[in-house]
Length: 193
Length: 358
Image 1 (tube, chains in turn cyan, brown):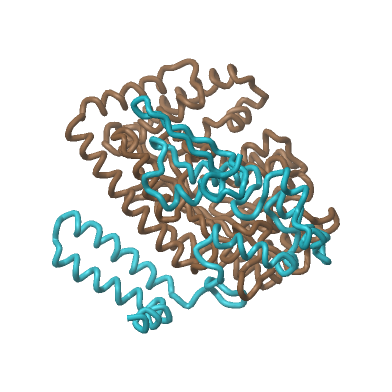
Image 2: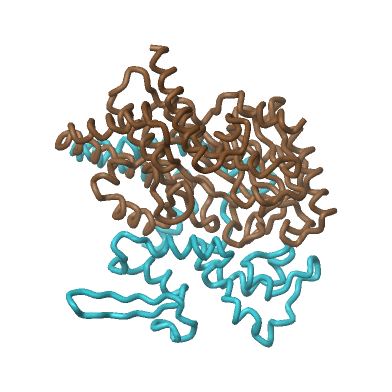
């Protein structure tokens, strides 16, 4: 049975909702179910966090939404990419699909397209903006970060005490400190305005 | 002799169990783990035994030079230890579940106070971890960042200018960083607000797990909140986001506790008192019951109910009631039933001793 949403992938999650004698059924594949629970606040199972469940289950089985495929499909991969193999470690596309892992650093070049597609589902961005080798870490000094965290904590407390004027002051301080820490982003924001 | 190394480890105080000060009963510990691999060698999943040995040798050499690790450390070659012994390391959060079963060409480097631990040849060549008591993510980051930079001087890391640090699993690529905080949230649980809180946290892109496994297991009212994404944000950005959310959760937890105290004070006191009674006098104690009772004890400590029990006692018990630890103390393998009996006896003694000291 195919997924109700994408109509492409096999539905592996079958949800039945019974409310006052009316029955509703939904059949989803793991990717769409994950997306739906992340984007739709009303999609909930009385406390059960589906995204969490899926992510964990798929992780423990070595599965990653968008990257790995269930056993059946993995055995008959796309014709064009079926010969894809890493020259460095002999890892194949099939192995990647089955385990969700790559064999060596070179694999990231060999399977770049496949991995690139999956990165969107996994992460908040596709480009690395953190620590680079040979540096002691990002330029942001931890002292500034510490100050930022203290200000945020203070803001939280002040709001609870309903001291809104003080809160506004703190909010501005936080804003300007954030701008100092990541100046590039700030420029882009202003440009958009 | 391998045996002595585990004994050695158990002798010293665990740094992240020590009093964590402010909010220490809610935020129990902060942890950051970095995944790193050596350029030019396959990841453990595709490496030959010879290549794995190469990684082990290079990593060990680099670790021995580290100032952060220092001179007081213990190194374990996992193949030299039984599964029960490896379970002890798992219970102390020094290794992962996967590592317990992987005994070929795997080693563990642990700083004596257990604030720092490095797994070699788990899913990645190096899995570096640093722990601190309470909510101190920035402090943990400073420590681990320093260690990481030190190791990098002897080990050329696999790195891509676009994708960042390359890891065996694309879910770790980029910063390779998983930051998490262990939280004790009985207020939210007892007020029926924990699920809403978890959903709220999930919507912000953070993962919440019970600490004893996956999903919604909330034994001991303990939860771990961590980042899911490792790419597209810098390390301080990830930490800031995590810290903001956790600060809010802590504040939410406090207000739930205050409400409970105001409306149901005797219900709470009774709940805690009964759990203390069980721990003090039971003759069989399952792991689950012990963990739940310890959670209540923690609340009691927060409410200043006890003269003799403090956070340190609770934290220590939390660690030592685990199955592998108990078998180590008993110095033999115990069946599940025997463990329950031994656990009860152990807890009775610990609490009795704490009482006598006061």
